[in-house]
Image (cartoon, rainbow over all chains, first blue to last red; front, top):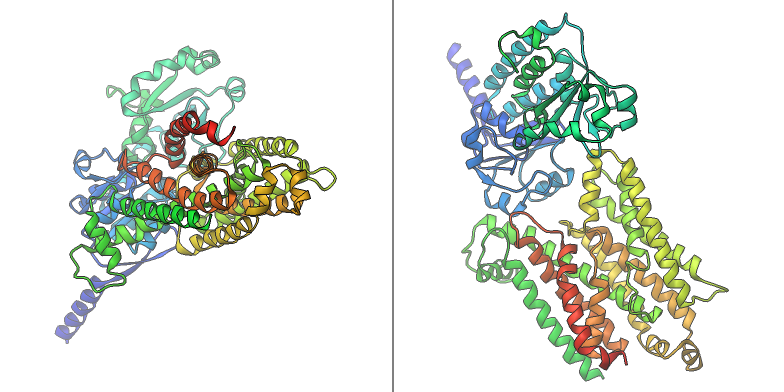
Length: 293
Length: 341
């Protein structure tokens, strides 16, 4: 009795391994020949997820800004996330392209569908959305177990951060994405979740990345200004002190400006836990004695 | 005259064919021109396959629609430019100056703004563009016409006013649009040929064919019009009816083209002028020659746009202006006196 059952189970597993239909995060059903061996992730966050799941060897092309992990830089560049070069993508013969709602254009998805390239859409909304997208990518590339392990580890680290800071007073935070015009991180974003997790309170409740008025900044200043800059420009943080209006704002005047790596903060991938830990240290240095930001 | 037309059309057709072959065989990925030709030829002839599936996809699914689109947009804008210049008897007139391009662009932005064009952007945005062009055309016509007539001075002024109005309306709308949606708008406004699907191309071609027919039928009255409106009326032409007809036809053609390409500057202005400087002012020659020359011009400039900084791309509108301006200056300096005495 046990032998036929085992056989049946093996048969079913073989069938499952040949083709699978998975629903992606933008409401499409994607049929996949499992496991994909030639993957092109069209966002740096997706590249990071694939490498973290141990699927880095299957990554054949990456977009220009995918600079993490360092191995990713050696893959073929397929252009920018907003205008990827379709000729290069076709020439790489991918069996799966991963696309992110926050980093790519819907038009690109339609074009890839027309070229009959399997496309899997990911839409990370908030920290839970990042975890869900890691699970989905794991499913798409046949690495569910690795994805579950990674998610569990991320949850443990985030719980540890929030436990450390939860009893402390929450500083009011303004997260600056762009200085002129002033664009900030609002609600319903991963950054908003991370600020909360790290023991801060984002003063901007408008969802997404809205423009913010300088008048509002002056009349109701935050306790801390977080200035997100590219890794190459981190030393430019001081410039804020010299700008008109800005130099009058309390946190800028009192030196409560914290410069932070935009790449680390804004990529909805596995490194959001690093970002949460870093943020917690910046906002509550007293809770992390001796470690320094 | 007929013989001259045939020779000119034959030469330009050969030039366009050569431009298309060149455009299809260059790109980010290297594919030889022999291979490219064979991939195309295999659609009608039984040829041995000596290319990969990826190469076939690149030529047939990526480059071919884009080259066709460039040809169609180039033709449309040049035709509209030739038509507008003929009715306004002003060398400055083109779809941009007359506000029709801005209207079309505003229509597309509204498509994004209202969210109705989002999602299936490739399909719905063109409809918004065409609607915007017609709204702008009606507005220009309404402002410019006095007692049922369309004087040239008010036409150009009305065009400039409507153009400025829609350009500022686009800026206002862009300021209100959410940052995520702004991306699509910015990509559209800089004038980049998108990868259109064949149904969309079909719509644009349909507009072009109808527009060409309407405009070419008026070629002779347009020639009379060039001699002055009173003279034209005495010789049996109806200047106002001709102008109205050309106006609608040019707007239709422009709206369809702008909706798939954004604001590609300079084509509607310089191609008809270049043709006129080379062939003389006869509209029976200028209109069909502008069609082919415009197609050739945009196919070649778009090829440059997608290859010079590969794997990235320059907006084709930047290339047309960058190359078009010096070429136009040369023509003007060397040939102007013989055509515009």
